[in-house]
Length: 338
Ligand code: NCD
Ligand code: ZN
Image (cartoon, rainbow, N blue to C red):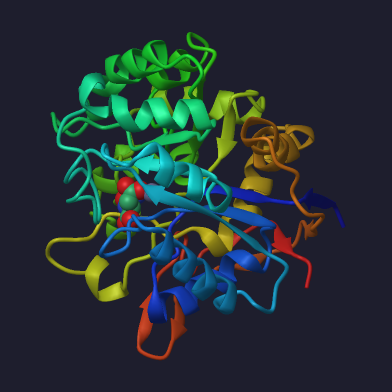
């Protein structure tokens, strides 16, 4: 039987939530991933050292059976002092910037993306060598939000040449192109944006479990993302943006945005890279690129996959909490060796 080993898988964009949901979803990542970059969009968002350290402890407690390292992020505010950032620097891997109201729990994000209003925090981050992760969408027409954000990435990248900027969960060919224009621009891409377009979400019956921000785009966008990922573009990292919401908040009128992919990510990525005869690039895409870009060494954690059918569970449960994964009930061609 064909096998493939993933070494030190890293998920560089992950939502773990809190309380019961944290206990449900965290082990579904920590079982197979060596580390993950944890998003700070809790309610309220993670903006203080106390909140950050408390959240990190709760994550560690939820993952205690596994060798797993949560890499913490702080929710961006444009009035953090240099001293505050200097003091918290060793506890975080990056700051995450959300334009206000653009996605789940981002209401207290920044109200203006004007470089001057962001300058105080960005200058300190640049001096302290703290990377900036950005949710890059305007509040324009939903299919154009990322494309419209490109000039904002350009103005931050050129104003702060020493600041590492990560365009989170890119979904367009425009963003792929921009990667090669600025030395200090990097990106993450999700599993679902490598697989689906708007058609899969809304072209037939509406599929709430494929609804996320940014929304899946056009076939040519997916092709550009796929080509960059399969060839392990050196500035591109895997970031699942696995964003669990309770089943009743997805299957309802007013569906929450987010696709839950943690428990299937390694199997589906292996299937995708195998089908395209690019398995030799998978470890770079899922681990080595991120270690180089963020400048850390991941712990050894080898996960063996076998080309054997895996039926995705209909749902994952913990007490009252129920969450539905992408591809629920469907058959995948690779599974994780138990
Ligand atoms: C994320 C969430 O639910 O926290 N939702 C999503 O659709 N991706 C937030 C985000 O990353 O935009
Ligand atoms: Zn996200």
